[in-house]
Image (cartoon, rainbow, N blue to C red):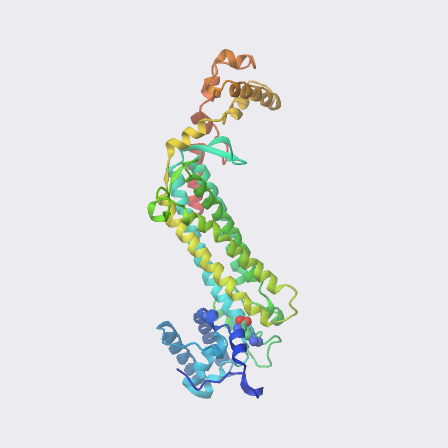
Length: 460
Ligand code: ARG
């Protein structure tokens, strides 16, 4: 298709580009996926040119019709992308010219690939970020439903991965809803800056032609224009910001992934992962491996890598556009794809995870996790917390020596440590009471968890 197309910039060259150079410098093998945005941007640009009298209405119409034809050719897979035409911009422009002749050559008036690629990437990220925000909301809903169901399920809460205090599973899960809430806020904040229109910066300095940048921005529904033309073509902050947020989101999902890996071990046995989301071993018949959770954890590396790659590419680049910047796209695309696949599969898998409530509750009851409750009981009897801590520590030491839990000790044994301890202490020394009584704002009690579920539901 379009065999007569020459490189749009071929004019000043005597020699053909070396084949190896074409292969080394091309970007169409990956930037082809920007085509919907490239065409959308070109349509708006043509409209603006006609409105300003830079090209005629009729010329604009012919350009737009041809661009739309090219769009449907690409969509139906009929369009053949050519590497010797470097990138998505020149592939589409060359096809346009071969369709409608020299008029097609008017589209690139008052435009350069430098502002064009900045535009395409911003349009792409704007759409993807909106989609990712929606996916995060979906994942939050999954967590919320589980949290509601498990508002009263007791499990051990950990610090240092040592059993610390009993908590409710609902409370644990709500922690992830909060993380995702912040991630969403960060994305929306970045979206505000992504939503800035660079077109009209041209190569770097603007143009002598009477363009109307604000009009193009309105057509493309941008919030504002990137005013300084040199900044507009050399800025990739918006992509770096996106990648840094993507890195934080991956960090967050890696933590639930890690917990699922841990919890599904024989040693924890807190969860059973759905068969459909695990794999077996080719040699050990008993194994059921948490591969999905592991891969979610593992894919964090490539997103961090994408962030570091783009930061490094951009570092110390002199103004304005440099070809180095072509290296921005693959990290961004890969981070977008990875993020979407990870959020998607986590949202699929989580509702099918079976929580072993009995095992979680039993584990929460063991291991002196009610020591803080005993200390706070003593505080209630008037003892300063530091002293209460000291007394309780001695009680725990005593219980450990006898291989007993706190609630196994008799009142006499307990009173030997402090006369303030009365028979009502046994009301405190149950894990059910321990979670119920942690009813402070944002605490772990089932009632508070239900309140937080309601609050977060409304926030969604
Ligand atoms: N393919 C290029 C990129 O991705 C488009 C801009 C090219 N500009 C240039 N002056 N060669 O960055």
